[in-house]
Image (cartoon, one colour):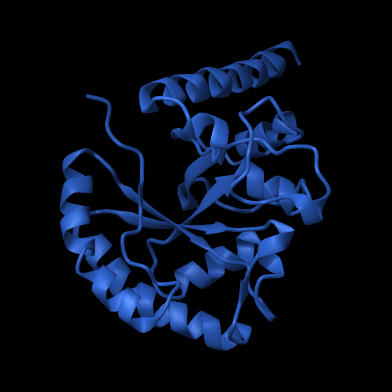
Length: 228
């Protein structure tokens, strides 16, 4: 059996207090199952805007995530935080929150020394495709890598849950994988596609379609590296 890569953090730290407290009851059983199938990472996307000013919002997340990480630590599971970047989510609430990897890592390490990051091609693209987006992030603090592609739409028309298969959009995967190689990352890649077209397929068929597209993009970038 191939070991699992990552699970979503079962504790809902981004909503109201009641949702957070009730979801915490699911955390330990989820960790037990995740560890039994080889999963060593729990992922959490942090919205780029909030109803509270940044300092207050950071304190609230920190207060909730610290006990989550204490449970994760018992099972040898590390928390991977993800910067969320599409414009419509940046504008969803009055106050801006974290949208840069180095700031997100600093925030994560403020409540757990085992915290790390997700490097996501989609969010990198919608953050501006900056070549320095991963620079300076140590290999052992990149805990998961997500790949999906973006349609060629103006930033104001992009929606986070409407993506396309790798290689079918405008994400510069050549540069993304070049940056990833500079970090010496050598762990699994996760295909993360939200698509109405894939939702209409049988799960096994959808997984196969996503795998083939992702493998084609990865293989092309490995080949380009060798030819260079």
